[in-house]
Length: 487
Image 1 (tube, rainbow, N blue to C red):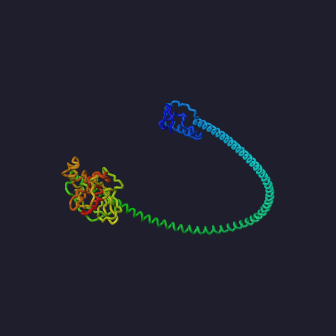
Image 2: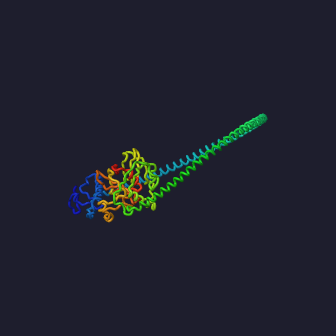
Image 3: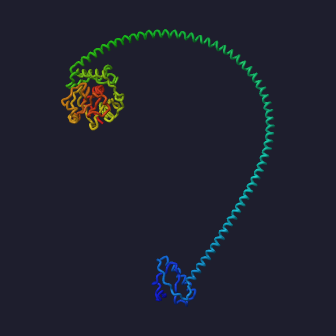
C-alpha cells in the first residue's frame, strides 16, 4: 500500500525503515473512506507489528515529524483502550483473588472451628466414657470385695470344719499308732529273743567249724613249710651250680677277651695298618651261621643269620685298628639311621633298591621285607638313576678319583691320581661294592666313609656312602652279581 514519505514523495512500506522502539503512530493517506472498525483493527495490527519489529531490528533515528492532518490517530486510541481494558482486567483479577483468599480463609477458619468443636465433643465423649468405666470399675470392685468377703467367710468355716476333722483323724491315728507300736514292740522283743537264740546257736556252729578249719590250716601250713624247705634246698643247689658255671664262663670270657685284645694288638702292629692297603683284599665267605655276640659289631642285627667270613689277616688288622679308633672317638648314629628290617614288597629276594630321595638303601630279604640302611647320595647334578649289578667287592680298597673328579676339582683330587692306599683316611672306608653295567665298571660304588655325619645328605660325587659298621654288614650279605636298582 503506498504512503507519503516525510519529504512528500510516495514509496512502499518495505522501503521505509522501521520506526524507533516504543513509537507508535502512522499517518495514513487515502483511507478516510474506510469504516472506523476497519481502521481500529488495522491500527491494532500495526501496533503489534511494530512491537515485534522493536525486538527484531535495532533502533534507527527518528523519522522527521510528519505533517499533521485532520485524520484521527486511531492507533493511539486503540492503545489507550487496550491499557484501560488491561487495567480493568487486572483490577477484576485482584478483586477476584482477594475474594478467593477471603473465602479460603473463611473456609479454613470454619474448618478449624469445626475440628475444634469435634475435638471438644470427642474429648467430652471420652471423659463421659471414662467416667462410666470408672463407675463400672468401682461397682465391680465393690462386688468383688463382697464376694471375697463371703468367700473368706466360707473358707473360714471350711477350715474350721477341716481342722476339727483333722483333729479327730489325728486322735484316731494316734490311738492306732499306739496300738500298732505296742504290737510292734512285742513282735520286736520276740524277734530279738529268737535272734539271740539263733545267734548263740550260730556262734557255736561257727566256733566248731573254725576250730576244724584251723586244724586243717595248721596241718596244711606244716606241709607247705616242709615243701618250701625242700624247694629251697633244691634251689640253693641249682643256684650254686649256676654261680659256679657263671664263674667258669666269666673266666673263659676274660681269657677270650684277653686273647682278643692280644690279637688286636698283634694285628694293629702289622705294617698294613701303618702303611695302608695297596692290594686287593677279598675274603672268602663261609656258610650261614648266627653272628657272635662279642666285638664292636655284635648286636646290630641280633638273632639274624649272616655270613661269617674267614677274613684275611690284612682285613682283620685294619678292622681292629678301626675298632680302636671308634672306641676312642665314638660316633652316635641317629635313631632313624640305624639298620632295621621293614615291610618292602615288590622286589625279588637279594635285590638292592636305592631310594636316593629318601636316602635309604634296601636289601630285599623276602617277599615282603627288606633290611634298610641309611646312606648319603650324590650332589645335585651328579646323581645316577638306573639298574646295575654288583661286579666286584673289596675290603679296605685303594681309592683313585675318576678323571671327571680330577678335572672338576684338580686342587682336591689331582694329587691322588695314582691312588690312595686303603685305611682309616681313605674316603672309601672299610668296604666297597663295585657297580657294573653290561660288564663294564660304572665307577659307582657302595662304600664306607670317613665322614659319617654326611649320612642322609646329598654330598658325594655320585657314590652311595654308608657308615663303616653298616657297610661291613651289607658287604657280607651281598653276593657278586646281585641286581642294584637306583631310583
